Length: 264
Image (cartoon, rainbow, N blue to C red; front, side):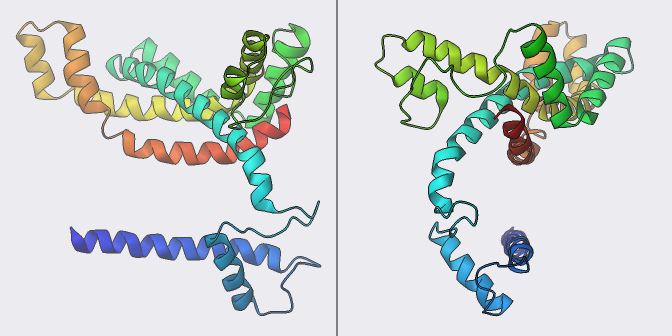
């Protein structure tokens, strides 16, 4: 166990080094990049030491500290990812279980086809379609922004819903509704890809658990189907899926950049 842990830690350090070094090299060789007077290795050491102290340097676009800009915009990204991740779990787990239980039946075929379709759609194209239909055609949701222009919400946490709830304005309820309406389309756009992956993982895990002997024995003893699904199938199908969910959350951070660009 100790050797396995040490190997994983060593692999983590090597991966971290390669990712940061290659990423820094891309900016180092751009024209007029800072630190070009130093060697690549020394420049990377200087940059990485700053990163460890939460100092990412100065933006070449507006001259402001990148760390200060992250404090302003990163909470909005995290709020979007948390809501989309929660949506993916709420929808993906039961739908994936249904597909696994109804394996090779029409329900499984339909769910698998929809999941494949959702996984194949590019995020920016889906965002444009949702905006065109629900915002421009039906007028149900706003096109962009976090609040309606009528409201001025003081930023406390950076999370739109929490800031609206903490506001002492007499229009607090309207602010919360406005923030929620602005969240619907970005959350749906960002949640599609992780939802399809959760469905796929739960389908595979559920179908494996559903064919085990202890599940068949419980059904033979006359245990209700609801009890079998809750106590035996869900409790044993979910643990293998949980470690892979972290990868989905990290993927959403990448997709969130595209989503936020479309919805401003």
